[in-house]
Length: 295
Image (cartoon, rainbow, N blue to C red; front, side, top):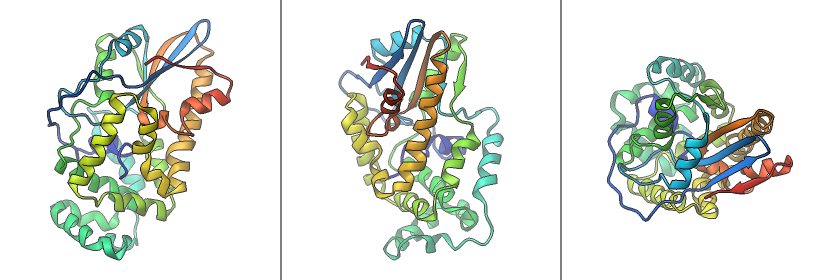
């Protein structure tokens, strides 16, 4: 299931509702690291983009790190007051003439599920055949998450941005909206179709996989995070290359350069980027930087 990679775009397009489900869990300890030298500290926090309402995740160590940080850096910033900007970037990349019918872009055994999904999509389905495959996957995943009871409400980045904004601290981004969408746009068609078929999973399967991801994230289990967050990557080397390795390389380079400036900042990115053999931490260590687990 392609999960973390598409959630922010779904929210920006209004395809994730604002409700949520209740949840009770043990005391949270989501993973937190830092890279530091004499006058610079950069905290690395792996996030999850959708959370059930009232899901506890803010620990004392995380709050202390956020309070010490003079600014926040996230993957990309979607201007909620101007969603047309994101929509324009999306449409510029997503719409192409002469594409095969969407239902013909999945394997024969998946076509009944695709037909059912398009029937449920209502008016939105009319323009689906004009969308590139990655973009259609994005559009279809929104209703899937909603059907599974997963909604964009109290997502980690949203809460952190509110906290930093309320304190008058700057918020920056590692990628523009167009840059982030561009990673999907250049995927080979086979990799895009992997994403599309992942969007056809039943809501109960989506929720089951999400619950496993959420449990691993909440307890800071990095091995389980790598297995659950990045499971779709194992099916497509190009997904791994474009959506994980290449972006993590870019971000580790940014962090290395930022270490030349004094001060303390927090970087909050999807937890899958901070787990597994291609994690940001691994790439920082290859650059000669010491990464310390804080929580």
